[in-house]
Image 1 (cartoon, each protein chain N blue to C red):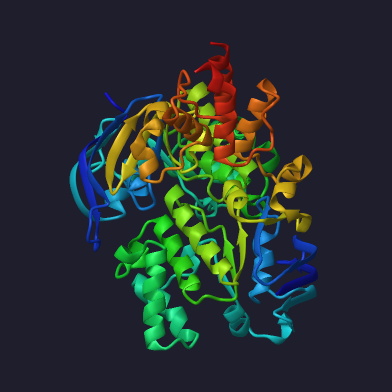
Image 2: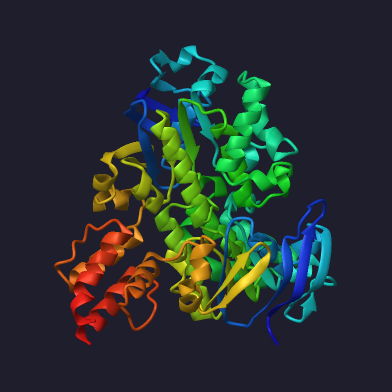
Length: 281
Length: 275
């Protein structure tokens, strides 16, 4: 059974005049790393909110179809119940941090879910270790840089031991190096810990290489769903204004001239590698 | 147009956000300010329209010492678009948001209407004019906040992280609009982490770290300086990564290529003969 299952799901926010999601069907299995991308306003954030029950329990509106998370229909499950299955990380970490230091921040979620104190302590230590937060242990969130805050916000989410991590543009407020660090952490959570990841991101240059799949949305609908190399080299991806990796763009331009490489490159290094290979052929 | 002289600023007296920043931006320039989170970039632009006042040093805007001008007077010269649109938007329709600033600055109803319609069109917001900003997506709200300031066409336009949440097409629209304003003599200043956006559109870059300016010059020279990239937490643009990787295998390819077409030509040059 899929971990996340959207079945013909449609949603319209209360008071809105058009649907935010139109008959969305997709399923995500355990261990996948899915990038959700598409033009601004296409429904990516709504989809994330749906995955942990904020839609329809907090953001109300018209719904049709079903979303099942780890076997629970989000219409019936409470947000609290879903929060321990789906961990959500947002764009602005400052909106998510509530306590006075990192230890308390990491303990806050599990304590609220009634996890026993010994187990809470153990989880806090695991997260500090996993995300390299030791030097921040006693720090107030407001004394931290944006990248540090986002690591702590992500840690607070992971402390709930979710099965799926849903991150909605977690790096768009960060400087490029802090952004890379966060994206590396996400890639490693998937690769080493088998964490299922759904990431909303525009800068595919940075993330396409790590993902197992890209879902492309436009106007509330899924218009492409497949492995990154396939989706990004489709004409539709360039047409709707997705930030295609530069290496992939070069590939497409060469292809138009009749020059073929053995596969679609996603990074500059990979492009150079494929060009070297083609030259030797 | 804007002169900043040895400006110091600390929010709480302990953590120093700006430690002696000096710079000069001429009328009609197009300048990017880049740097680490917490480098003082936002604090710096807030000094340009009087939202913050220097605790030491001077800010001169359009020939006048900013300390003699009110925020209202300064913001007529320097329009600032904030990083977080939710701090800027408060009315119940996109059109009203845009009209608000225009009316306040004394535009006639006809001018207000014309400017509003044109700005909505330029930013691809026509379809959203009657919607509430709060029912829009993050990226759309960001564009509405931009529109409210762009519509008033201030002499200096300062934008804090304008590309956040924007897809490739929206970024292109935004760039075209900024370049168009610049062609008409407006000064454009952006604070951004988006290195590709800067390389493609901004001839001058100021790099900041820890409340100081660490480099100020042509974008190509500032962003090819490894030391500056390191200190300012910047990464190489993907095209440069590709150019360098190609250069390693094929020394005839320059590692300084910055345009997609240059890279395409370089690869065609390598493979052309074998196909």
